[in-house]
Image 1 (cartoon, rainbow over the protein chains, first blue to last red):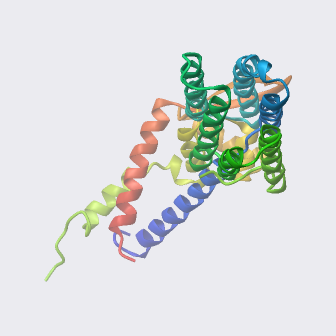
Image 2 (tube, chains in turn yellow, orange):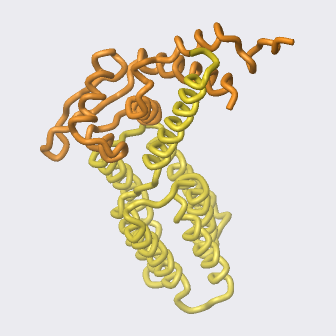
Length: 197
Length: 114
């Protein structure tokens, strides 16, 4: 049997089997972020940015409480979702935590910078918006593809703040909330999962 | 003139050796898929494996049973939302066997002329 057609057919079958395995792995990697996380950050972002227009003195306190709580709630929602899905990966959880935690850390440093008197209220808000836009864009590149365009929309909002007057921060909050709700809706339409980058 | 033997052009003995190195248990595509999936995730539940492989309860259960008997996977039963869930993880033995099997497969695929 050596070197004959039997070996060749066995090798071809092995190649087909590896293709089958590759397909299953790709299917298992389809992103399935819990919708509750999108809704949570749509609410936090919508309220948090609108407060700059309506209650500027409460913005700092709001973000100081809402951001860490939102982060912890997102970790819990992701963990619970993985258990319900039946697919647990510490590596994946760690990657998400490092990404979003890193973005939170950058924002905390900006707040520290502002507290030292280097940035004014409007400037710090704009700098944070830019960091958030970059955070979402990079999440779209590395973690969850639909977040790419959320990042682009937020980058557009950053430019809008520079040129549009009036209740521009309320509009930024509304745009962020809308972008996240549309992302959740698109994910639902795609059968609950979007292709991972 | 006889063809020169080497890694790209193995002789009959070499092909036989490569065939011998193939793990019989992992020669079945479903069992191979289960073990490969478990290298990528810490734990997978029975229902998730069923969803991914598209196998019936009985068929998947039989494959997992064989892998468990050979010490390739370990099972742990837990309750999630008050429902019993069987979680599977890859053992060190399973990981080593998969590595050896994939090396043998690579040799077989690379060593046989179309």
